[in-house]
Length: 490
Image (cartoon, rainbow, N blue to C red; front, side, top):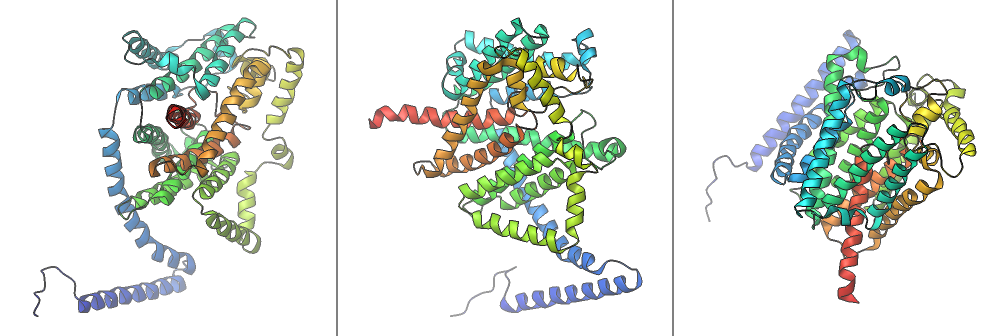
């Protein structure tokens, strides 16, 4: 039976010719590289590596950007009112100037502070309007379950203004935290499907990725300001610390890794996730943030465990250890990790241990009350040590204990432990849908990053703790879903 060859279709002979053409081109390229290495003193193996990887990187980049465009359009199509609230809160976190404790005390509100107060006031007005008009009953949602534990911590922090070393600062920062919790409560009172939770996640991850993109743009415009003497990347305008760049890079990597492994069909945008992972990892490495790198390793392990791919982590660890021990990479890794610091500086966790030790001494004088939420670190400890330009003590737990003693620590610890418990249990829950399992994977990975980071920076209780609110919001979503289904099966 005769068959007609379709126009534009490839026959066996065509594929053979294409393969021969590509092989010839590759061989000629290798020859050119070898000659360049001989006469121009170009590193041979580095050039070969670039030659081999460049086409793959370009192909993945082109396909990934096309897939990413579709994902962005999906996010736009699912835009709703609470996406706007999150964006306003994000605007309120932008920092355009850094002031020490003295300047903050003398002039609490300046022109730049209005950029923070304005969006927060608008968010508060929107929440009040939706509550009064009964469109969103977020107050009742705010004092339920895991979110209720955070709300109790916020109330304790607010009450601590009565004995705070800087009452107005404690009151403002505590109400600011309550506003953040109120926004999450309004979202949980509105969403009722995993697809809406995914849209919630996507928007927050997008904001973190956009911040990284703008940081790199700023580095291209102001390279001398963006990189310090050890070549650590930071944001210039607005100001973004290297530590923040590190955690953003780690989060982007974790989410991309989880979704790459969760992708179940050929049409899944794996190239997009691979591209995002590479971008996040480059940003993480450029930040030279040790605890963010450790958080990424821990979070990646959790994702691989949840996805039942721990063998990937084991193979990667063995390969990394081999390269460090038996190649010239070892000294470079050591130099990268130390960042030019002395042994005593590293052991002192970049002066953190000095701050924490002094905080313990002050807490011993106020064991039942603390020094006031959010003010204890900046005004009670750091200002007295002569480092008032630092905004906090680089530890959520030290800030909480120094500010509110056990009264704030107990509900906050309950929220964190409850979040871990709820998300970890989903590993054995086979009633979850594929999208819910995927969200649980990335939420657990992100929780691993920020929990480890919480001992060395403020990730959980400082305005706005987007990452913690995201994973806790999802854990509370699952908890409420289970509690609503339980009477049906009882």
